[in-house]
Length: 274
Length: 117
Image (cartoon, rainbow over all chains, first blue to last red):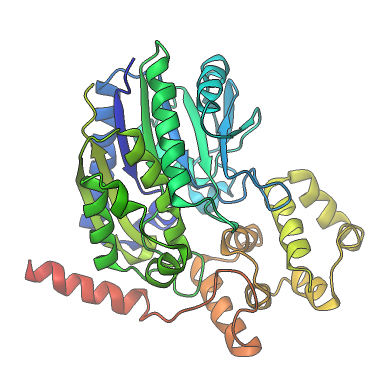
């Protein structure tokens, strides 16, 4: 089946961990936007949700760092973080090993993806799922792009990974939904946590909604680091989702800077025909 | 200088309950498994979040290491700032401080902008 849903959202741990410290109206609007995104995903009746994440050392470390990885298990545990810190209860999330295997085999035709039969979710996946599938009733296929430990895969390779995921999703009989989750400009877990480059975010989202491949891939990591912080490296997840949309254009459904959440909280969708 | 080793131990402590148990039962035995300088050992043992930050520990590791030690978020940020005062700028990695008005001032500015809309 052709991909039934394609979108992108934030995953900042502050969204749950420091919920009450944000402006109430903004937080409620964000949570509503997440809720609507979940409704829209469910409305496409997906059999599985591919989550392209930028994990933060829950599974992968600099001893053996894959540029790209996909989960291949029937279940995953998460979040790995202290439950009291993240305020999300640790739970078992369903996967689909057989489906993962078929998708991975297809992705491998063009991208050398690592596979993992063990995978612990961190806030990068657990925060979105907390809002999107709060009953954990939709099988998840986790995918990861190394955005943490340089050297990082070039943006063009993140694009290729997104294209490969799309080709894989289209090749199986199941109905596949896909989201990318990451921050745009942000300086998380530094003394500058909360700093946001709103203009840069708006320009990035303009390129993303236009699905302008050339413009999306034109950022260098040095520029991203300077203008969007080390957290900005996570644009790879948005870029892979844009590639998976295969030319479809996007809409930003919510985007507000929330300093205490350390990022412009964003919910966006690509108009793939479901 | 063995930032990799410091980060490896923090990674294991963050994700592996058995390493945490072994660390709290016999810290020195676990530390001996990693090639660490005395400065690094001290920073990990105390734990000195500010010094670990300056040594270049990736924030995505350090944030959770701090939470593991029940260091609250505002305190975590403050300890990093203190680390910069005590030990100078971050020595390695991509988590250097770049300057920021602070969340409160930033929030106030955004609130004004929202009210104007």
